[in-house]
Length: 305
Image 1 (cartoon, rainbow, N blue to C red):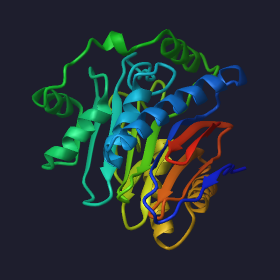
Image 2: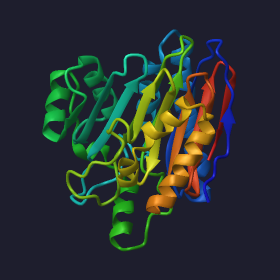
Image 3: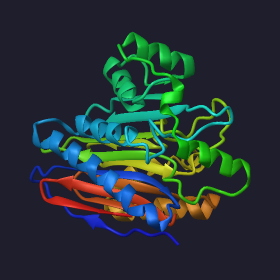
Image 4: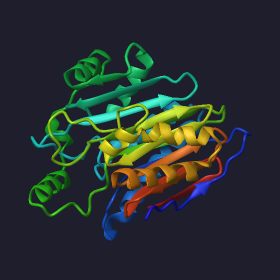
């Protein structure tokens, strides 16, 4: 059953806010509030960027960096481990006015891949950098590498061991983190970051760094970040599809719900979507038992799972 629990209505009057998600998954009840609190911290920090004059692109980068730095989530520090027991990051970011975008994938040894994706967006020559090329680009743009062990948490090691033992990972946060925002000028932006799937093959790339699958933004319609089974999101181009439904007039909540239902119906896959439309209305949907989220901005804040 697809659950689309909340939506918010904005207007055309320059309202601003940021909506974040902490990943569609199956977090045990005892840990759910921790994930909600982490999302709320990220949303508040990003809303402060908007209140201080930053734009929507600044806000989504800041929100996702905050989640990357929180070891509760499957991104940045604490991200899940691949088959070699290492962290490989994927991330992307996009703004809707000039349709500029940047992404990195299969990246090892850097703490905040979303900011490297932002650097790719600003550089403008290419949209997506992979593996060693992404690491070289990051170093050339002044990002400091870190020891890969510094990104690994005990929880990530336990999750890998559990999957290999066939026990599953009922306390894991989900497949990704992300943020969408609309600022007072009407600029929309989206960003997504992940460690991918537990025990993934070396070099596996999911939807999170792919524009149109995991992230999309267009000021004429809105902005989207997805989470869940990445291969399904890639096959159906979910982020772009949600944006196109909003372009055709659907509420953000309805557009998100329809696409999550399509993912389930066509591919028997699960996931979640957060979205904001060009008029400042936001919504989300999930087909998993949990997807922590929070929204903060000029009209206050809300959060849940």
